[in-house]
Image 1 (spheres, helix red, strand yellow):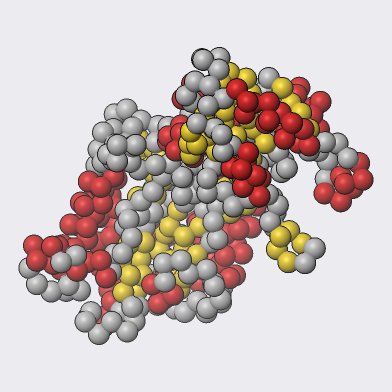
Image 2: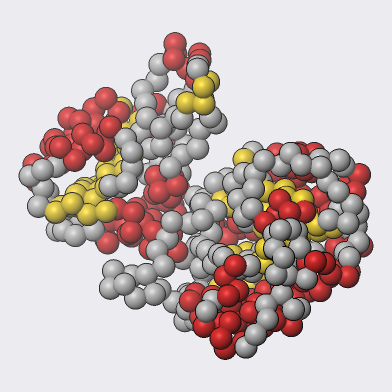
Length: 423
């Protein structure tokens, strides 16, 4: 659990990054309607949560900065027993003042009044331009006289790049739960008939262990379904002698895991499956071993493309000169995505990959990213040896950059062929 002391420290660092005579405004996420009179489970906006730890909707944060000093304000839903009968208890401003280390806490109906006071004195305003919300539209209208409008997401994305010790503990917990889920999937696959049954086994482990939400919609893709990268139907039959690509991770106290394993339905890889799987696994291991401070993500990408291109040639999937095939990016047909992404409060953390000068941000100790090479071969691809058609394989781990290299946070989730078959 993140302490209130840490949230206070985050707000302080964020305030220091603002220009003098500025205000920063963040709104909570809104409840999202699912259908008539029903709503999706509420999940707080990640940036809002990062600065506060506050999990209720209908709230706002305002950071007001003078020359160098700052004050922080939290606006919350007032206590309303009749409303709480339907939607659950609220902290209210008095209890929120005691729990959260904001300078002042007020009810959300006073937000407009205070905002008018803040805007009279400040030259710059930071907020999320992309938020599709009437509150943001109203804020834009009110701020026409403000000297500068600045996107708040970049500053918060930069702050979120380096994970604290407490954040890493939560990510590790999410990965530990995900490990158990993937291992259960490996052991039960041959007993089940449909992809959704396997999905249910995985997500049962998530919830049973306190991860009340998956980090993203689980992908359980058998056979040729694995060649649809964001396949989430999960309604096909599990067929013997085919592989299942399982991309599933949970969210534990707002922090994510993101793991992919590719396993045989009947517990044994065919010869062709082994050949392709081992090639991809060897590439993944080589790329992970490259990770250290100051290396560029594009370097990892380029190396993965070279290695996978060579691997595809060695298996007879690509034919021709390595240099020519690499230059023409012929491998892209089978490896169309990136080698990995930032991970943390969001499974695809919104942290930037380039700085304001458009230069790539190198890896630093404390960053967490995925490494996930994959090869996807359609069952209809007549240019590929028949034995490889209809196979899609991705292997994905979550990596913490360390001062002296890296730590594979998901190293205990088995991925060697012999280990998978043993389970």
